[in-house]
Image (tube, rainbow, N blue to C red; front, side, top):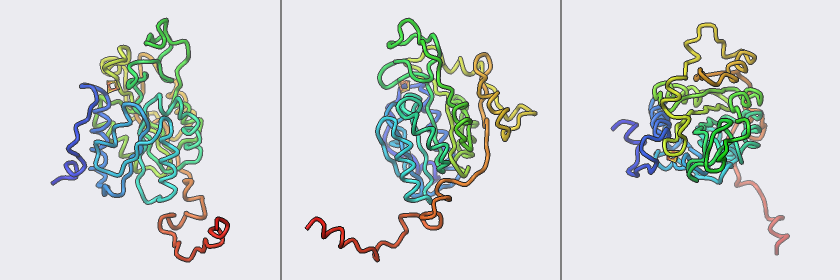
Length: 286
Ligand code: SF4
């Protein structure tokens, strides 16, 4: 039996046929198999939205949290047991809307989490309202005259927030996305992988065809240096006829858990607690 079969479950995903979520699920399974990670050492945390179901269909530890709260839960799990591989998944509405504050602070802390964002530029689960990454002018149920706001640019924001690994993938290119997820999991520190994920039911603008005509790979650009922050910013601002995918930026610095003296050597779950006397606390309640 291969690892892939071990990672599969009997449950059938309920996503719409043809949705970009399938590509992300399969790329993540491929990545876990290729990394040969024991499933008991992997935790996948999700939020609310179509993406929130992903952990149900991979046989690892899982936590389906609240809307926008994926990163606080994933951060807490990592701090309690930093020997776990912690993967957070969420949508653009979940992570770049209600979860935006957590997103920025997790990046500047450099907690060793891989954050995969299903960026479909719309609220899919609630049947098609404008999201933080919807394009200006995009007509949806909530913006019948076209979205007025400028979309959030998660790649530029991540670079500005000192994330140490910033990448964009495309759900229609499975081998490339698999490689990005492998690199993100192997990276020591916060890794953002924003994934262009067409919502085939409600986003009629940003379709597979739309992206297939526009995406190009940064690794094929001979002169591109993904350790140069200024160059990364320039690429992060490219969006239109050409859309870059790949690793925009990576750097090295100590993780939050390495800097925290209480847990830097031993994970909190392995701390001895049998010599802690809490009787004085209990007396207060007698
Ligand atoms: Fe995918 Fe959109 Fe269907 Fe959600 S509503 S499962 S994002 S196609």
